[in-house]
Image (cartoon, rainbow, N blue to C red):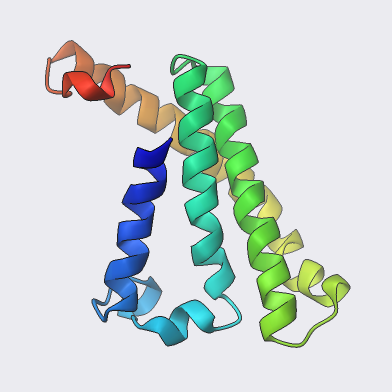
Length: 136
């Protein structure tokens, strides 16, 4: 599970030290502490949970899609609570603005990501281009 957490944590680190890797080519700790920064932080947990679940289900399509949807909800929940706290909103207001509008797009992207991710992974395995450490 650490590799999934570590990879995304490194991305957050790069953005925090000033590399423009966040949306709109932004960077800095201020982005992470902004009302929407919780969605970035939440994705660390998304990556850890999703990666772990996909590995444990042997990279099968339906469990991968379910894992990605769960991960998307983890990101949305974490980001919504952060939004409420940082923007001084009620949980209801944050839920309406930071969760509800993103449920359907999140599910669609999660299912698409699982399909495309497994497709690419399977082709890399078939071409013997995937390091053996990632074949577990």
